[in-house]
Image (cartoon, rainbow, N blue to C red; front, side, top):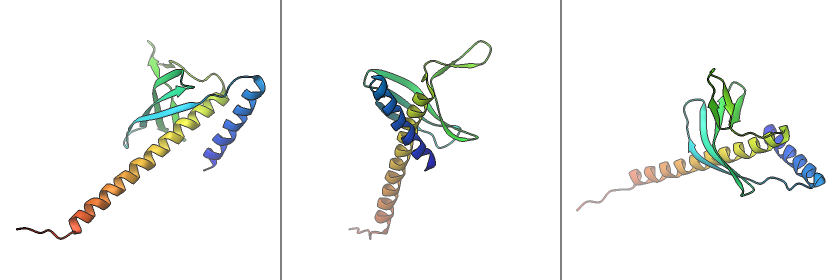
Amino acid sequence: MARTQKAAKTAAQTAAASQESGYAPLQYDVKIHSLYPEGSCKALASVNLNGSFAIRGVKVMEGANGLFVSMPSYRTGNGDYKDVCFPCTREARNEMSGAVLHAYRQSLAQNQSQGNQGQAAAAHDQAAPQMSM
């Protein structure tokens, strides 16, 4: 809960700073494409910025310190990974990460509620008396 409040506070600060500087705040439209319950990669997403710029291949990863957002990257000849694109400021990174993690948590909750509804329907079908002719 503290991370969500911190992300909201950071987003508000970024919006206020962008109004002062004359720049429009960024609008993040995040779509979670795949959820993975196993392994360190928990989800794949795409992010659309202000309806003008799309970033595909964004990953929600689980590390030693919890969930984090990994930008699309490529492997260099010496084995290092370099991001293809990335937020240039800490505020932009926090804002984007907050938007992606929020969408991930919403997707998880929606997925779990759909699973619970399916289980309840299956249990109802099994409990209903069967008639045969």
